[in-house]
Image 1 (tube, rainbow, N blue to C red):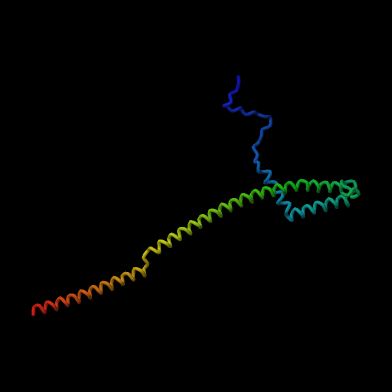
Image 2: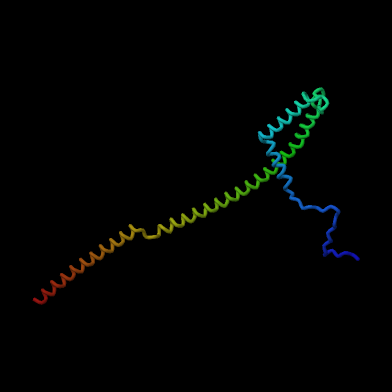
Length: 177
């Protein structure tokens, strides 16, 4: 019977179970190794290893020496070459991962800077709007001066009425006499 295209295939079982692995775990371990290789501790351990190697193969029992000084310590040279051939790619991998992190950080910094700029521009516009609005708002000094003017106008009006009432009273007394 022909299989339908809209139904998924059944998972095949293999003899060896595949564990799900973290794709980033190798990169993390490479960074750890590269970080360790860049420390004084690594240099001390590597120096001690080389010194022990040279001392054993130079001064150790003749029958137990495995790398002869007459051959120029060929095995030591091969070991150091092997270490260098693995360390260079590990260091490059760590540098690439760091460059990726730096790119992400730079992008986040750029976005944060854009948001800060937009916020600053918004606040500047709001402050300008407040300044314009405050120019239209009556200040304490303005209200005081307006009240003073009103009081002066009321005093003048009262004086004018008093004078007018006196004139009317004078005319009434002249009229009655």
